[in-house]
Length: 428
Image: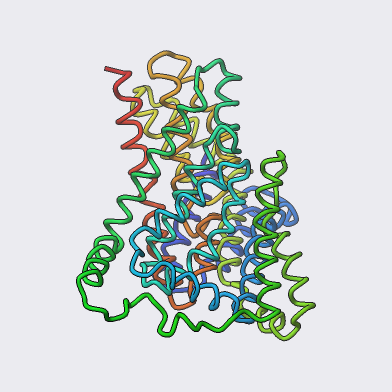
C-alpha cells in the first residue's frame, strides 16, 4: 500500500510543481512515469513506455493535420463565410445546435466518432465571437449525452455490466439520466460563458437600423466561390463524416484519427503546398501533454493504485458516503484515461453496494457511469485534448486552464448532484 500511495503523491506533486514553474507538464510527467514505474513498481521500461497512448496520438495528429490542410487551402474560411451569411445574428442557438449534432453522432455506436464536430465547431465559435469554452462544453456534453444511448458504447458497457450482475438497469433510463445531466451542464455553461451576452447582442442587432450585424461577413453576397482544391476538401470532409456514421451504424468502431490521416494523405497529394504547410498545424504540445499524463496513470493502474482507491471506497461502511466516493473515483480516473475502460473496471466495484440493497442498484450504476463521463472535457482526456487542439492557437492556454478547472470540478459536482438526486431518495 505504501508504494501505491507514494506513486499517487508523486503524481499530484508533479501537477503542482509544473504549474508553479510553468513547465511543460507532459514532458515532466512522462519522465516521472518512467522513474516511478521502474523504481517503485519494478516495471521494465518497455512496459512503462507501452502505456503511452498511441491511439490518442494518432487521433490528435490526424485530426489537426487534416483540418490544418483545410485551413491552409482556404476551405475553412470559405465555409465559415457561407455559414455566417445564413446564421446572421442567430448565434445564440449555435452551441445548442452543435450539442445536438454531436449527441446524434455519438449515439450511433462510437462516441469518439462525434469528435469530427470539434474542428468544425471551434472555428465557428471564433468567427461568431462565441466563447470557445462554451462551444467546447457544448461538444463535450453532446459527446457524453449521446454516448449513453442504448445503441452506443458507453451505454452498452454500462447496462451490459449491470445486467451480468443481475442489477435491473433499463438502458433508456440510463440514457435519460445522461441526457438530462448533460443538458443541465450545457445550460450552466451557457450562463457562465457568455450565453447571456449572445442574447443581448442579438437583441441589440434586432433593434438596430439596417446596419449590418457583427457576425455577417461584409459583402457576403459576393463571397469568393470555392476553387477545385476546396471542393475536393469538402468532399473529403463529407466522406469522412459519412464513413464514421455508416461504420458506427454497422456496428464497427471507426478510428477517426486513421480516417483523417487517409483523407489528409489524399489532399496532400492533390495540393502538396497545403500539405507541407499543414504539418506546422499539428498540435504536438497537446499530444505530449496527454501522452505524459496517461502514461503515468497507466503506471498507477498497473501498480494497483486505482484498485486500492476503489476498495477503500467500498469499505467505508456508510452506503451513501461509499456511493459518493465511488462516483468521485470514477470521475477522477476517467479525467485522464479511457472512459470505456473505467466503466468496465469501476462498475463492478459498485455492484456489491448495489447488491446489498442499501442503495438502489440502477441509481448507483447510472450515477457512476455519468460521473465517469462528464469529466471527459478535461484537456488530459481524448475529448478535451481534441477540443484544445482544434481551437485557435491564441485560445488554447485559456481553454486548457478552464477545461481543467471544469473537469476537476465535475469530480465533486457530479457525484454530489447525481447521488443526491438518484441515490439519496432510495436510502430514506
